[in-house]
Image (cartoon, rainbow, N blue to C red):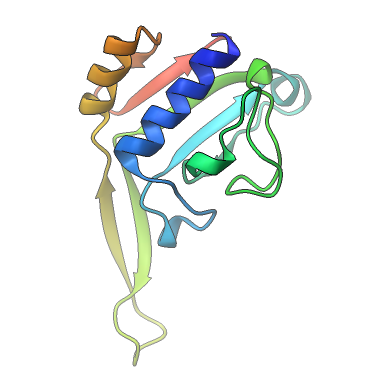
Length: 134
């Protein structure tokens, strides 16, 4: 994937699923990603809402946006958009100890169709849409 493809990938994701937030309980969208550098250090992943359109730059994501720090597109090794994610919200404002689990579905099938039209390589499974470069 080149920078243009990554940029179009993120724009398409955000247009279809919504720009997200760092807090899963406030976010309309959710994803996870890792970089080649992170894989060489601890094999960890970041997770958060999809970046807002103004955070999607030419060669990477903006500093201080939804993801908190910039990510250079050429360092992204694996990107996952799950079919669904779970929020845990207060059941009622009066009861601050009881939480309700809410499943949020993401239309990864529609996302895959659009990405295919754009010629952006990806993999669609029953649980997630992925771009894997490692």
